[in-house]
Amino acid sequence: MTSAEAATVFVVDDDASVRAAIQGLLKSAKLRCASFATAEEFLRHKPPDGPSCLVLDVSLPGMNGLEFQRQLVDGGVRIPIIFITGYGDIPMSVRAMKSGAVEFLTKPFQDQDLLNAISQALDRDRVRRHEQRGLADLKNRYAMLTDREREVMALVVSGMLNKQIAYDLGTSEITVKIHRGHVMRKMQAESLAELVRMAARLEPPPGKP
Image 1 (cartoon, rainbow, N blue to C red):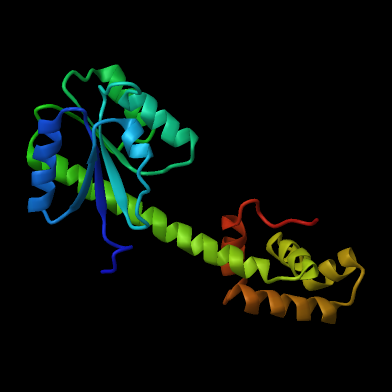
Image 2 (cartoon, rainbow, N blue to C red):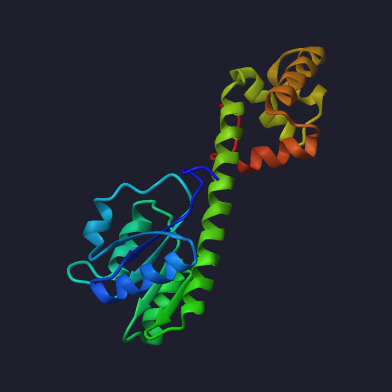
């Protein structure tokens, strides 16, 4: 596993003894860890490229954990979060989970419960990163199409036949077939169904200019 692929667990808790205990647990589980006393300290740290998750205390000096979660969501930072708290209640946990938290653990919690939540969070982040890489590759392929090939692709995935596309674009059916072949090759699509699925993943979906 490369350094970029190695997982990192970030811990944000203002209690030094809690940070030390979690770091010791993660070390025993052979997981890389970085800990911070406040959300602001975490924000000053550049996260690694590999999979990661955040073990976050709800009660923090300055910005609290739920406010920090909202800031991360609003900023497009999609790191999976596991909340830990000494005084959690149901409305608080519901709010956290609705905003995408993986787990909400009340102190004192079992070591295995935390490790299970971390494992789930890291798996979620690995899947997300894999999907992101696939989408980036798909967008790169789409960027290789000419404007006319994009037009043809949009009409093909809408269900139109070659002769209908030719009429719509004011060109010949043979020309449409050539463009369609280029689209399939450049997009690396082996079937029309696969091309339709690719088009659905592109944001925004390809359409007529």
